Amino acid sequence: MNPVLLMILGLAIFALGYIFYSRYLAKRVYQLDEKFTTPAHELEDDVDYVPTNKFILWGHHFTSVAGAAPIVGPAIAVIWGWLPAFLWVTIGTVFFAGMHDLGALWASVRNKGRSIGALSSRYIGKRGSALFLVVIFLLLLMVIAAFAVVITGLLISTPSAVIPTWGAIVVALLVGIAVYRLKWPLIPITIVGVVSLYGLIVLGDRVPVVLPETTLGMSPAAFWIVALFIYGGIASLLPVWVLLQPRDYINGVQLFVGLILLYSAVLVGTLFLGTGHDLVAPAVNTATPPGTPSLVPLLFVTIACGAISGFHGTVASGTTSKQLDREPDARFVGYFGAVGEGLLSLGTILAVTAGFRTAAEWESVYSEFGAGGVGAFVEGGGILMQQGIGLPASLSSTVLATMAVLFAATTMDTGMRLLRFVVQEIGDGLKIRISRFPATLVVLVVGLGLTFSQGADGEGGLRIWPLFGTTNQLLASLTLGIVAVILLRKRRNPWPALIPLILVFAMAFWAAIAQLSTFTTPGDPDWLLFGIDLIIIVASVWVAVEVIIAMRRAMREPAEAPDADEVQAAVREAS
Image (cartoon, rainbow, N blue to C red; front, side):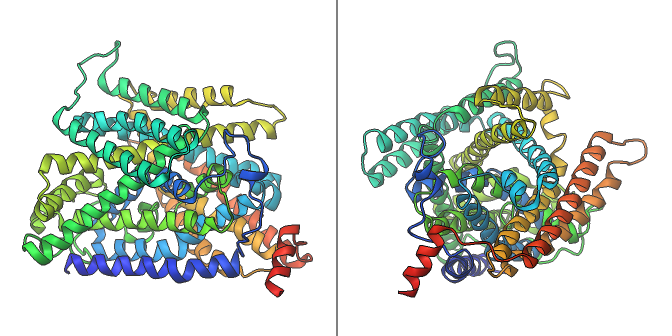
């Protein structure tokens, strides 16, 4: 298979999905209203509720939900062949992820910016809501602990990424001041910010930073992990316009520049220079290494972000909904944010299947399930960029490694802010008011405790990561359940939510059940993961039952009375 044809086909599917399907969802299903007063205006506080330019907000939403997951998932899943991964990324993005992200954002905006956990209390009841928060808490804990370890590994293995990683924070602070305090035009700010960021990448490539054996009495791994948690805690407390928004926006633009370089390398190298070649990986791998699990259901939980992800719903309803300036902007921010992830996943598939010169090289990397990941993306993508556009191999690796680090870092600090919200919501449920500072302290203590639970190298941060895929997809299906309940109460078409809900829940639940046996291997059982997996399964089934009850109740009861904005919108449309 020619990689250029695969790239063009994938881009065409994403474009058609955004042009047609997202328009249908926006106009017919969610009925986005220009005149609706969003929570960013109604509850504006200049900290969490801040009306935001849709391009800046798209950057925040996209980079917050992206992280390393849309790289890691596809880079592992191609072990079953490039075709299953390609189909799930493209079809999943258009009909599953876009619907889910836009739906979670719309539902939150229509409920004063409440998180998806808080919405579960209103639409499915308090019993289901408490268990819903348990699933969200565990998922966010996995994200911040594991991403701290992933970022640390990249900073140690690719020391040229250290300067751009931390320098990006300074660039973001200056961009925030320029946009919100000095009121400078966005386009020149964007150009200067992106040029500065790539200048830092070039500087980092020439001046790699390698920590000594001990820094402040800590190993390099421990030092970076502690530094990342401190940064994440501070970032989660700052007003969103100071660091969160500008950092995510600049990272979003930087990602698109990186993707343009990667896609250009495939196009130029294959069509013009003759340095490219067909995909070396099989379309469907019938000779997977021993121990590789079956494609179904594992494909659907291995590729989460990049097809559909429950984490997206927590971001959409946790931070993004509080910054939406106009309700119609939700289509661009939510749906196109999902498309951005699809583009990254498609680029990853190209990098890890066309970036290797021979099938033997590819097979040597994919010698066991779980191999590949970020390392294969950086290696394969670096080769493509070197051959296609002449970028030096070391600089290509620095660009891609920095891309992975920056997205993982933005996801981590957004995750810490969201986890702080969850801690406060749990406090509200227990009739205990927890302000943002104590809540953030709880997040730091629990996160660091898990990360260092198995030693100073931080390996504990990956302890519960094997449960991320199933937990993430179960949360996505439950989020779609809440969206479906709302649509039913408003007497709108629920099937765009129900169809992906059924498939995703079935695959994720199947995978969660299958995982139970892997945690009870004779001689090497992991009772902690077994217990957490069992809790997640029970909580998910309970919430699913509550969602079904809520759906049946919504169909029996009279239609939900339209609010004032919906009445006005109907009058405008009729006239």
